[in-house]
Image (cartoon, rainbow, N blue to C red; front, side, top):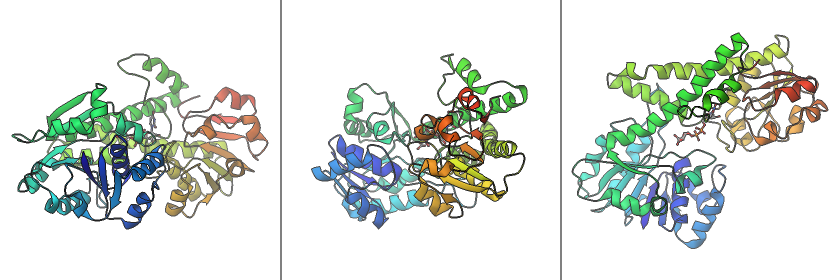
Length: 435
Ligand code: UGA
């Protein structure tokens, strides 16, 4: 099928390449010329495992092209809109500038029977407002939220755990049927395909992210209680996680969640609920946000504790800058925030990360960066692990670290290390919510 994908950021670039990889003819459209040039050469503008391969294959096959010309959307059967909806500069609500611009740009090129499939994460009610804008073209609007995780984006797009399609009342075009064809391999596998109204589809997305954020903040709240009682939050998570109704996933206590999605989505959800007069229904999301941010303070405090209350002119090696492993994304990264705070307290901070240094340096040039892990920890007075790359979590042994550092203080901001092994090697180990 011929498809267009408007917006070639994280979501759009992966979606375009993934759709080409399952056999569709896809044009990716974006206003950013440099991004389009890079994508046209088969270069992914960000680190995402598996993406460069499917980009190159798609381009070589002739089924995948990229352009800045919106007119290239003409003739596609389905137009996916996957532009960004960042947090507004003046508050917590979502900024819909790019969504509105994408629809304005697309309308002149729509033909009767086309399906416009919104994928961007939008405040509930947005799609109902957009539908009349395309009505006169004879195209129909559906909302088809995206649930991909960075680091697993290709797999999540080709083989998602569910497909949600929100449709407006009284549509004559069988838009869900057309999307079943688009996602044919996943549909053939029996992937749940859920057809809803527009509002439900928009809400499914933000509710899922709100739930995940709440789960993380729940366990981090338990970490705070563990810290004053001598309990161990990792054992607690293991034990409650055995209850299938609770489940162990997303109960990783540490410095909390970040990234381009969870933080902004829970804030935008609260802002939208306020607008709808139901602010109290999701008032708990403010607590979720606050618990999350407090964990960064806690991590900084542990470094201070480890160094006798003073970090001024002490060398602190920060292992990680990305908001999570397998990503070079530093948007709202708790790891980088901890590094910046330590720098603000006068520490000589050296940040290392396998993928995110270029992005981190562009945002925080005041910090020192070192690509080589061992050089980063050389002569350090303390180490803090903030992004659980295997290189830091599994492959850094305490005995090896001891040969390089000046001090023997390790703060485990992700509870990824073995406290017994580090203590046995003479280190002072601090976890998050662990004795
Ligand atoms: C998240 C959702 O998981 C996706 O389903 C969703 O599609 C995506 O947002 C989106 O809205 O586009 P992502 O931002 O890639 O995906 O990252 P997650 O894997 O959810 O991790 C988010 C943050 O939570 C990271 O900083 C991670 O370190 C942290 N986290 C995760 C914890 O602190 N503890 C955990 O147990 C799990």
